[in-house]
Amino acid sequence: MDSVPKHIRLTSHPGQGAAGAPALRWGAADPLERGPVVGTTTVRAQRNVIGTHSGSYGVYRALAVAAGNLTRGHRADLTDTAPTDAVGPYSQWGDPQRIVSIDPWGASVQQVYAEHLERGYDIRPTIAITKAHIHLPEIKQAIAFQRLAIDGKVLLDDASAAVTKIAVEPVWWLPGVAERFRVTEAELRRALFEETGGMYPELVTRSDLEVFLPPIGGQTLYVFGDVRALADPAVTLTARVHDECNGSDVFGSDICTCRPYLTHAIEECIRGAQQGGVGLIAYSRKEGRALGEVTKFLVYNARKRQQGGDSAATYFLRTECVAGVQDMRFQELMPDVLHWLGIRRIHRLVSMSNDKYDAITASGIEVGERIKIPDDLVPADAKVELEAKIAAGYFTPEGRTPSADDLARVKGRGLE
Image 1 (cartoon, rainbow, N blue to C red):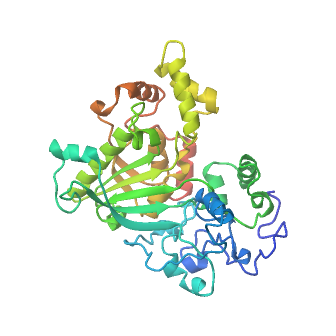
Image 2: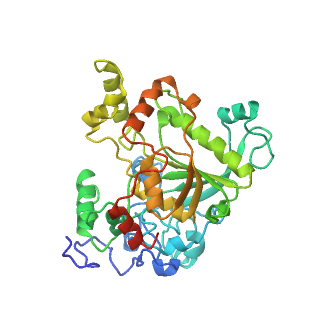
């Protein structure tokens, strides 16, 4: 497939092609030169991507259409849906090496692509920004123990925290994603096609389409303080990049440290914002190390039932036996959302993960202090997890030593 010239149609999809679809030039600094991402399922002549908007929820949309609950061809009324806070544009938006997995212009399509919308193009936002208050019992406890104090701005009288919430759907520029994973674009396309059961034949038949809307979960960002301050390296930024763990985050399961670490990070973010800084929680849908919750529960059973009981020595072995791999979160794409926010320095990173630290710093973002989870927040049943991770090199205060290849890659991108 590498020998196929770009922009040559390999199949005859009715109504698709250069005649009606706006061109996409990924990495162009000007949104009109870049072009809108159009994943409509109703006006096929407009489509310029593989897949559809809404990520994994596109399947539910299909079910709603089949059940007669949704009219086929419904167009979203975007009146009054504009972001509550402006984000960007930042210089990183025009750098195709910095952002390959989200659309930098996804929150502002109503503004920057107003003419396209007037001409009837079905363009959907892939990012939404709103305001909210969050209520957590752990924050009430922090107030009771006088670790936090109500200030009426970040932390309100009812013990809720004021936040800006940002939802982000994935938008993959396949050449850039392939480069991140050091594979050819052909290898990436073939694997995506085969491992989704052939769900997206355009991956291997339309090399002219370089953007893919994958059917996976996205991210939610919670910002404590001024969103614009995230891009100012002079303002102290406290941040945690957190991967979904439904059992712990929502239901308080004590077999891992996920919720305690998340709520500890939120407390640190609130404290930082109250002291004149800004806080960020970036929450990614990567349940069970992106292995899925069924696999995670199977591993729990295998660990608990093995001879000698649950142990740090065999913690990852049981995962490999079930899933074939320890972890599929692959943090290579994670820093994109940080670059979208204009972040250049994280002063306080609430994380013990070398994988996350390495991905962030390799992308050109400076990290200062790294905050460990306090020992008294680690549930008894989760101690084996932390012991296993540390034994496997999960955390060292300075991260791992970058290889010569890493340094060459960073230098080549002008990120040093």
